[in-house]
Image (cartoon, rainbow, N blue to C red; front, side, top):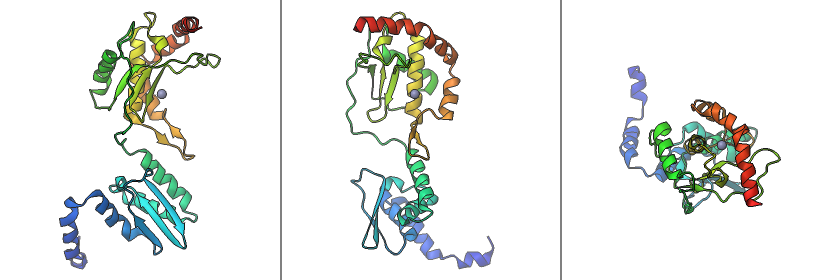
Length: 256
Ligand SMILES: [Zn+2]
């Protein structure tokens, strides 16, 4: 930086800001970053109890913005888009997409919903032990905040026409992993269960994205790439099209 430029910096103001920086609460930090971006008719109000990370309302020429302090560290571009969205006009649509995309990538906030009580020990497989093994082998024991693992309730009439039943699931709100109870059978090898657990833990790690239309996307190209790198990926597809059908037919009969 040339000396002439250096002199023109408002040094005192800058120093004051730097001093307060580490002591800022997220709320203060958000306000300090967002305020200079606001238009004349815009008011920022507290959003600490809000469900949405961002909302706005216009009445009598005043636009009231409610912005969660979870956006306090958002890149300045995102904050600009927050304002552009609230402002309306031709830029609003694209700005909204950017803000939504950013919000969907934020780490999951610990849920206040109670984790369901699930039974992990089955007749043929212990899901607790298998989950620990998968977590160790493929996620380096990364804390994926799984709060429950167990056998699901199982649908009485699985949708067999389409050939698809939900073999496993991960619920984002409760961080619970479930495996379909039809798979708790000696005909099902444990590597199959492990592969399904791997798939669900991948969901737990990667979360979801929202596409331009606002739809949740779980099986993103990156998700599929990582899934395909699992050594049992191809073997699982073969098993799914063959032996699985026998297992499901037995399950249907048992439940009939
Ligand atoms: Zn999936």
